[in-house]
Length: 247
Image (tube, rainbow, N blue to C red; front, side, top):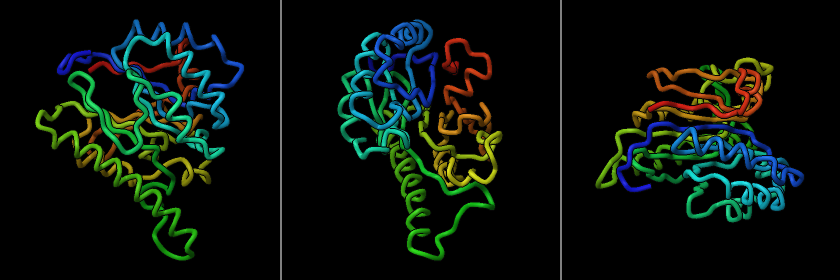
């Protein structure tokens, strides 16, 4: 796809949890997505248990995807500490795994991070108390800063994009995790991730992780946020589970 080409439709899904036994399962899925959209976004949990064999299966299945893919890793991809290897296996010329980075595809800029937990709005955890608690909060702060820097790079380029899409695994707002048990909200995302979306005039953001959350919400500045976890899309009636955003 040439520089400056017009992106009209972005397909998005999260939490695909590819297993070793999934060989051949995703071929028709990726073929359909390729017919219906210009770019595919995958919002983390690419693998089921964070195993490189699962990543190899996904890499093979993605051969049937003929459009650019932009993805981030999720908590499942970190389970065995092999996340760097998973990224190396899956990432190819047309498949981009973002981790605090940004990329332009056509006339759209994509910035991606995994994100982290920490809670929402007035119930965000604060940098206070034990070292372990401070480290938990610092992880969320760091991820928000990395997202902000990635979006800033899209603005600073000599040919800045007017359409910016943010991708993460954890949610940036409470609205899209409603449906999950409230006691686990702090582990599903953090409002700190919404700050860069508002500051950098992001068009839309996609995430996953909360399997029984809510499909769509908005930040305080009106940025549309979509929880595209595969179970949510199936529950919403998407027979082939991916959401298409028309630009």
